[in-house]
Image (cartoon, rainbow, N blue to C red; front, side, top):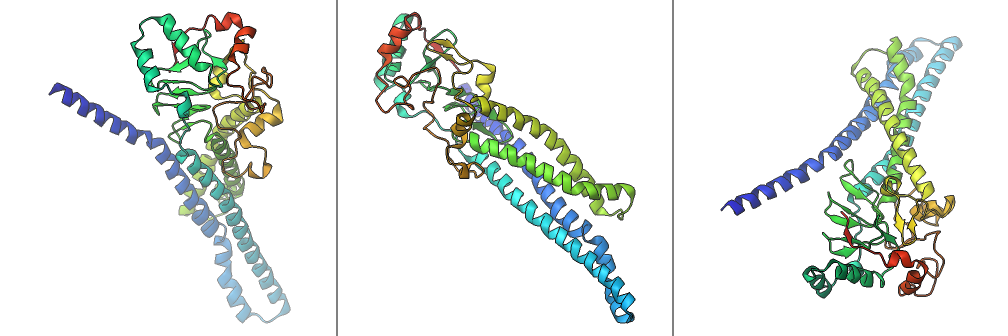
Length: 372
């Protein structure tokens, strides 16, 4: 009976956790929807046109009432001002919606692109799993993992030089793969778990996340620059104090606040991309067979960018998957072509005997450590 209650309570807590995990996303969506309403309706359709709309009846009545050339000249100026205001509104709306579409598109892709997990090749087979769990001698377990890792393109190790093994997913972790405790799975090239998209950022969606940050910065910057002049007019009392005043003033404040925080985050990830690092690798130096190497994946500025966005530059600004490789192995500058599966045409997965000869002190001292 108690066990049933515990299972029910555990299920209820998991359900509440799933619901609460969507709260940051809901907050962002509500803020974006409000910003859309405030910019399109309160700014472009009300504030930008309000002085001209008030002048329009005067212009029309003046055309019927005045017949002199001077009067028509004045009315022509008013019509010109009205045309300019309408043109400004149209330009504002076109540019705003162009940025908004890419902003929303990249945010959607960041949220709903599922993290990619290691393929079946890295999982322990049923027999290997049974042998591993039933084996009580640690040294035998170590050797089992070493033997299995020889058949895989795995070149990174734990801090003590052990084969990176996940005891939750029962797999040997590919290079740059980590276990996400929130998603409860191993994620290829994991960068971090982002609560604002309620998703784990990794190999499958890191490009979309970077694009989302870039378009978010552009979105906030565009709103702030176009709203600023009307903010000054409201501040000086040049525009009537109506409902739109609150939306325009608050819109500028929110845009500036988000711009500052986003530009810092975007700048940090640009630095990571230029060094071909993930957030986890920036805080914890990756360890290779030859030892720790903080720039082990650094291939040079342009090649580092291509590792995220791909070789075809026409896809760099579009949220379409173009990252090279399959997320299981990556080029490393510290390894030659015969050791690196992405730089050689020959089959390199069985070349670990050569690795052992090159680095005997590490291959002989491998220790099994579980990493979560």
